[in-house]
Picture 1 (tube, helix red, strand yellow):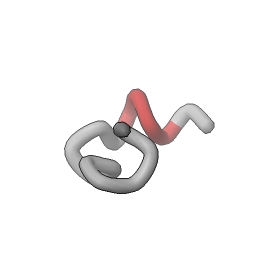
Picture 2 (cartoon, helix red, strand yellow):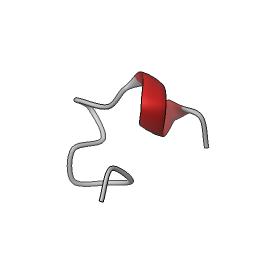
Picture 3 (cartoon, rainbow, N blue to C red):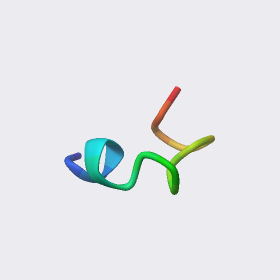
Picture 4 (cartoon, one colour):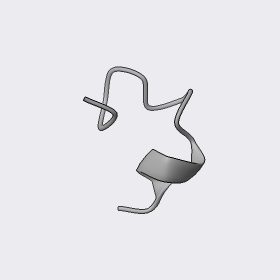
Length: 17
C-alpha cells in the first residue's frame, strides 16, 4: 500500500513496522 509512506504517523503500529 502507498498509505504507509504517506500517513506514516497514522500507521505507526499498523503497517509501519
